[in-house]
Image (cartoon, rainbow, N blue to C red; front, side, top):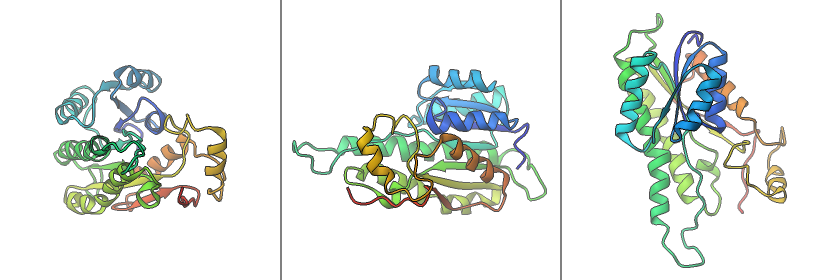
Amino acid sequence: MKLDGQIAAVTGAGSGLGAATARHLAALGAKVACIDISEEAAAMTAEDTGGIAIGADVADTEAVQTAFSRIAQEIGTARVVVSCAGIGTAARILPRDGSLTIQSFERTLRVNLLGTYTVMNVAARAMASADPLDADGARGVIINTASVAYEDGQIGQAAYSASKGGVASMTLPAARELARFGIRVMAIAPGLFETSMSAGLPEDVRAEILMSVPFPSRMGDAHEYAKLVQAIAENPMLNGTVIRLDAAARMPIK
């Protein structure tokens, strides 16, 4: 898919992977809708990209529907949709204080998994009714964000790993179902990246984590995630799979 002149929608565009992706797609000539739970944060990215800003909670179906209606009305049908919105949670199943962590688990799944599914559902509906873009009958691509935690979850990451495992697991069945509409579905499973989720790590913890990253032995840059989004969008044979973007890291038990 040629990105120049294309319409893209990015959730979580107010910071981190989402902001980097929105900026990168805009630099390639795409018109970008920046969606974030913080409309102010979305507006800052939109100002950098020349796109539009939309404040929406991806876990709110009505808000997502409204967001994509706005995109269609203001800039056209989104043909590249990237879901970066998510939350990182750490809670043991049996915490030392004896409290239940069920509400935390439910919230994590609601944002990370249900939110991703909702965006995919609404976006696919719009794409499916649009005209094909090429001789293959391609109508668009949906790129979701999993995490290496879906395979290498740490203690305290039961909720986060379950939510990202759900994102990874629905990639192939979604791709198979949407194939008849010419819509591809992919997922990226990032490893350790410099984002707001990792910003608060103490230096000693960061150093210990990086010992498990073979090469390059550093945190990933959000722009490197964005470049993989570009590669997926541009290569029509990438469909129905999860790509680990992790510098060969495999997280040890901690």
